[in-house]
Image (cartoon, rainbow, N blue to C red; front, side, top):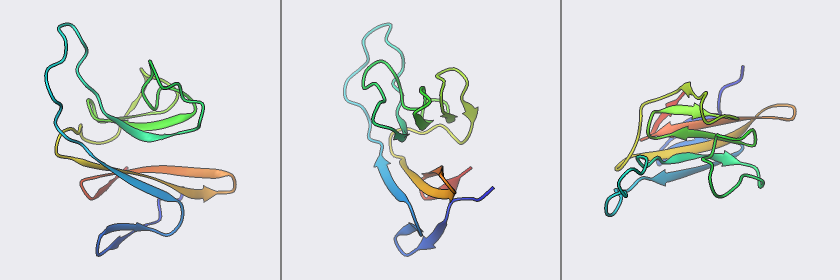
Length: 118
């Protein structure tokens, strides 16, 4: 198994091939309505056919995501995520990258506050 091609750099992390982005999580404004589920931030990647309503990234076979409410990684199901890293929320910076992992394969990786996960 090939790992991500992450290398430390002056600005944090650098990758040799692929793509990478970061999301800064800010505190919410106001309160959730009574009976509403707790907010969950999911950071990940997907193909263009991910439904924009009613599903979190990672809940479909065309998406991969790291969820902040429980620290689990999801791909293809909203109920069978795997333990992956710590939960995250306001004040955290989550990075997500995609790198080549072989012929016709891509590896998805995540970074939390500058620390590579998994």
